[in-house]
Amino acid sequence: MIDKDFSREHLEKLSTNSDYSIRCKVAENSHTPSYVLENLSRDVHPTVRFCVASNKNTSISVLERLSNDEESGIRTQVAQNLNTSTSTLYKLSGDLDWFVRYYVANNLNTSSFGLENLSRDKTARIRASAIHNSSNIRLRKIMNVGIITNLEFKHKQFAYYAGRDLEWLKGWENRLFEIVKVET
Image (cartoon, rainbow, N blue to C red; front, top):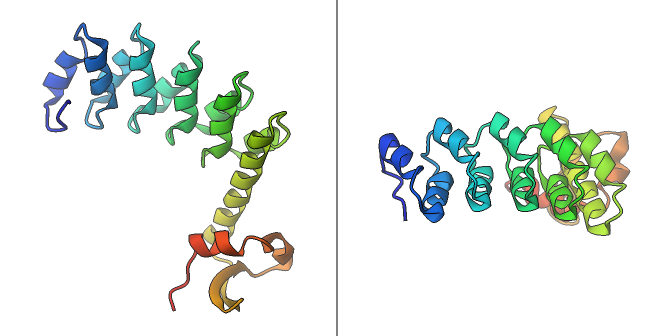
């Protein structure tokens, strides 16, 4: 196991180790410098690139390049990474591998355009995820503009959208309660 307290120099040295599993551990480490992740993203071993794509500190430009990787598992990791740009996620929403599209549909950064495309996907699981994610995006937008009001609903406190679109919330009471639990 690679200790998080290793110096940058030590991580850089380990990143050139002949054993791909050590290079992968360096790629997974949250303290690995971005220039080392950049170098590891070009590794010949797909497992190392997979680990780079899953690192939460991998740069947008590296994720963009890895989104073109021939290995679908690497593209899947890019689709799951919250640093992946909306334009890269949009591109991946058309990936041939259904698993990549599934994770794009579940990524909170996927644009409404990408989710709209995925809501028409041939795979039911992807359509359902895209619709669920787009509803969450809509809820987050409502919450961010501050049009939330308290309401006693079914003997619980909930926050709800105070506007004409109240029909949209039917059936979302439990999900809404999880997201915006009002302290009583």
